[in-house]
Image (cartoon, rainbow, N blue to C red):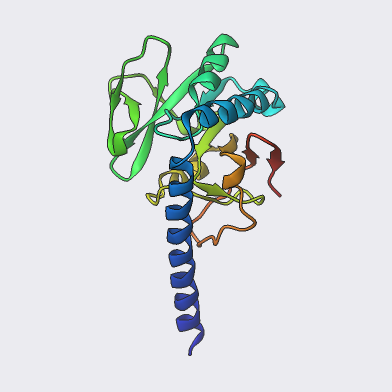
Length: 200
């Protein structure tokens, strides 16, 4: 087997492993009772609000959580209360477009049933973001994560410039190693309901 064939075979194995992990973690997370989601999310919010990286940030990118994802609304409200500007993403083709939101902003159901701002909401340029919350189905201590398979955040993170990127997940979603692929991009921080990890 040539070097190229070996590389292709390894990439295929990693893709299959990621798909299996994605499906397993989604099933485990979706089985979590709502009360456990609320409790664990509360612990994550406390750890987020204690981060110096978030305290320093003027513009925060969040995401509107759905289903049994880590609840992001408390962190968004805390950011508003601290006088920070908050942005949410909107799917535009194969990329994410960022828009400012406040407590009066109307969110509509967009791609993948995620609530997102209208296209008329004021836009935020990626390089304006200082701190970004990133969703994850699984994440490892190096900051590599398994998302939902669209690659939206792997495309966005390099465009964020100086922003500190932070994956939020329940502690059971933390795994020893994500089988990363060449296009995967690691985050700077991982925050769970039990710990804060600064990726190396």
